Image (tube, rainbow, N blue to C red):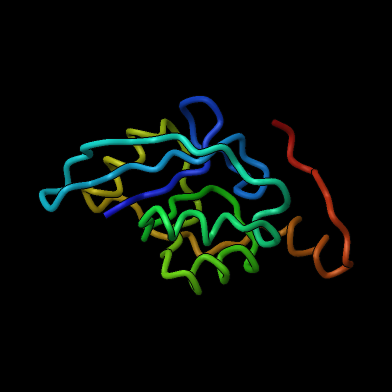
Length: 128
């Protein structure tokens, strides 16, 4: 299994579509993290970039995220990547909590993202 996390430094970046990079962790059958790599983020908002196909090519099946609009969540889902929103904290600790069964999807989309997309605007409203 491979888990992807939008990242800024060693922490989850709460805004999926404008993160610095993605940390991709490889997990063995015993739920041990056996490797990780950092991928630079692609240009553009999460739902308009090609990140879903890039992550799928890497074998990612799980995305642990903070905030994410429904467009991005839908595109990831279409690529076979299950999304868990409402996450936060240190990247490795978050992945370990997920593997221990302690993470559930909040089900809440990024409200500001949804408003801007309904009005056909691009945006950069979340600070780094």
